[in-house]
Amino acid sequence: MLSTSVLLRRACLLGQFAGLEQRGSAIIILQKRPFAVEQLQEAIIDLKDESHSFTNTIYSEFFAVMHGNQAEVDITVIFPCNENHIRKYTSQPVYFFRESVAAYQAIHLPYIAQLSTKAIDWVYNILDGTSEADRVLLKDEDAVNGFTFMPGTFGTMRCSCN
Image (cartoon, rainbow, N blue to C red):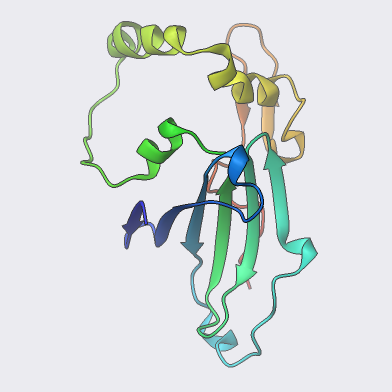
């Protein structure tokens, strides 16, 4: 167990897939979905193939109904994971700060510049449309003020409205 969060309704586990140990470890993130009280007495549904949401390089997302308590969960698998992933999902102190243009230029840009290309390829894959194009909600191609808007890693494209 790397960490748990009651606030996020999430548990982060570190392990290996049988037969794939030589490829490295995996982080499995289980996140509980809100309960629909009117559905609590319905039968528990097994995990099915269509529950797979998406895959992007090492990240995959699934949806499942847990046996025993009928809790719906979003499952994120990071495989193979590295030390940076393990550090990210291990419990640690939380700090809040106010972002500013000066702080971004002095702190964030130098940090981003020192990252290896491999570490941020996933960002460029999203921006150029080679991955997750179906998750993009809004895109502005303006050369100066353009942006791409999409759900975050733990966002869902499913509507839970009744």
